[in-house]
Image 1 (tube, rainbow, N blue to C red):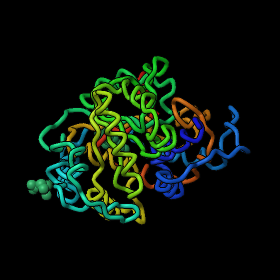
Image 2 (tube, rainbow, N blue to C red):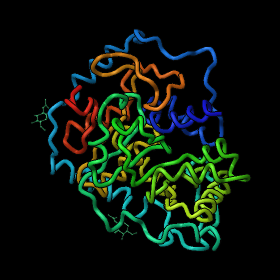
Image 3 (cartoon, rainbow, N blue to C red):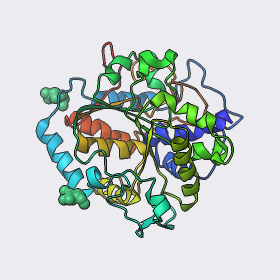
Image 4 (tube, protein in one colour):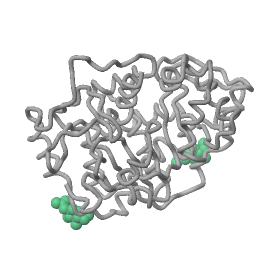
Length: 352
Ligand SMILES: *[C@@H]1O[C@H](CO)[C@@H](O)[C@H](O)[C@H]1NC(C)=O
Ligand SMILES: *[C@@H]1O[C@H](CO)[C@@H](O)[C@H](O)[C@H]1NC(C)=O
């Protein structure tokens, strides 16, 4: 069970930066199990996939090691995002933007959900991002690149810390990933698979959320019509057991606008991954956005040793990327333009 689950997590969080293949897997991950291939095992220590060194060298050449924020580029990009997508107001479903009687159209299967008074009650009253601004935000992917990075302190020093897919934050990881969490995402497939759709006992689920304190718990409840009941039960479990976390839902209307926006920037036939969604949203409410743990290749950028799939496990799946994934190349470009900072090195030297 644990293995299956990790694969799903992987596809959402780290996989979010991979190729179209993985993106489609991401899409499916809400409804389908992704089983590890029993024939595959973890890469051997010296393994470097064919052609991978060339791609990694190319990224290293592109990636500007001396980073400085470029105010004008940042403000221009943020303005484009707020005009085209308006995440500060529409990024999540709220009682303000989704009244009783309105319809929600799921972005993946186009099913239509009517907002009943009961459903309405689990929406947050107003968007927590509409009036507030933070100086610095860390967005933490779960890539194996964080292992031994020593980035924990730096990650936690941000005013607002965003993490992907309920990652473990136990003691052994603090030094590399930190522990502060202001927003954490979850994939409804976790509720379904790991916690039996939350139709039985819910204590294990509730307990697992304690480590995130009173952060926001963001999940895509309205991508597929079929996931709504499990989402609703998740919220009830959280409320009934007085877990301090605050559930919020991705707004499928915002996702549609985001798709159009990124398509206009060249991410053709593409759909926003969790990483893209979080970064786009954060750029609207954070003055300086730092990305950690996003590295789509199987080998370390500097020393080329093989990386585990996540900083917390190494469930093998095919992650040998032979071309720079398009989404990742956008991060590098935005980094070079001084719009956001992409961290690829460890935090002692912070160099590639
Ligand atoms: C790298 O970034 C620095 C600071 O933002 C800038 O001055 C420099 O021109 C950039 N170098 C390249 C090769 O883009
Ligand atoms: C974003 O949405 C809010 C509320 O719907 C609206 O008041 C605001 O003008 C919008 N901002 C932009 C830039 O379109």
